[in-house]
Length: 169
Image 1: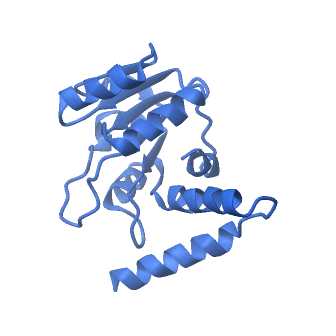
Image 2: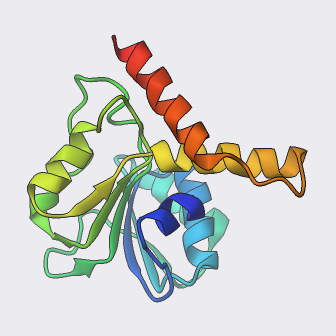
């Protein structure tokens, strides 16, 4: 995930983050954000008990569970770690006109852009889907298997886009 956020020019140090979801993807994101120095990560999940379980498992003062985004707050990042967006008929994970967000990142990826990324951009919010995260995971894997060789990130990204486009047709 760090790779994807780096590509967006996002530095988690001191950032205020709204995290949507409390499953495995959210857990990984929380660790990356807190290790990166985020000052606040607010978890918003459909099931509050799951959000509280995530907070209990990870701990720390910077991690809080919220029922709604703070309407007066400015968030440096809103991150969708839910499964919403995997199906074309899914509702948006969060209507972004309800707060102030500098950056929206969707862990879901698809051919073109996800509806949530399009929604964010329509509101003037910088946004990116999960393609960079997918490519970043592949690049890290190659680094582990082939130490000393630089992964062909651009070729990997192009292959992923082509595969997504083919699958969408």
